[in-house]
Image (cartoon, rainbow, N blue to C red):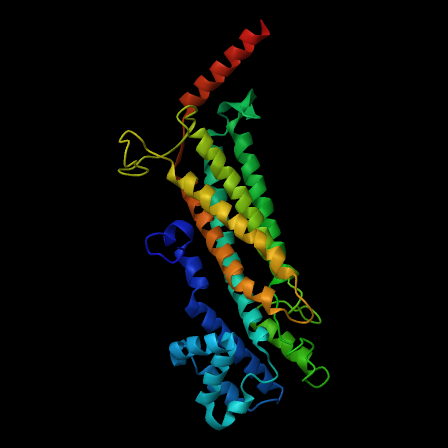
Length: 368
């Protein structure tokens, strides 16, 4: 469903889909192989000519049909990719993927894709915060009736409600940034992650060089069976989705016919009902809530996938191939809808004043 042309823009942004597309994924694998070769050549482990030849390859040189066939045969995509890279180098093929293992390539590539995704999330969050700020500046001093446990409480300024949402989103942004600092790590270690194929010190130097080249962090000794960094990132995104769901749900409640203090600006056909011509449904808040709910639920699965056995555990690792990208995709959809929501949101001061007056009248009546 996330790939349907009919639905995909409802659930994810085009930019996030591009970051997690098959093309982008294979390109990241290739980039990691090229970077590994370049640093190994700099340390004299493989010929410079091999690194140069690999650097000249691109996605266009990969036989995608053959890669899919090899994937279904082997159960891992890097074996087929490496075979094609080696065939392209002829006599020098033995120097490709030197001292590396599949998870080195895929995990490092995953970190690159997550970094791109986190940058997009940060940009979308900035847009939402700017939208909330605009409403605080324009309508913040407008009084409205507060509501606790679904009942009228006491008056408050609209700014108070919006500032709570804003501060929560800022905390989510900080948590996501901190999670990236812990989880965006290079993975270079070989079969059991410990660089044992390298001479003393060489492996660590190469790993550090690759990390610096790619803009990633280093953890020692490795993280191929320690998935807490990924769990931090995905979990932080899931909590953000929870916040977005809460905000959108509350906007939807305040837009109901009975309250009508908020509304999404109308445009021809927007939110139309196929059966009731008088209706103009709130679509941005509705989709923001739904997609954020899906993102939060998808992110919750990452804890299960952190339970690796021994030095590698394919039965849990494979699940990340779906859960991590889809969490990013759904988060981008929820963020995009929320940003749009605050762009088209209108504040009905008249409804706020009427609801406040009616609520306070009931308070006075009950006091007597």
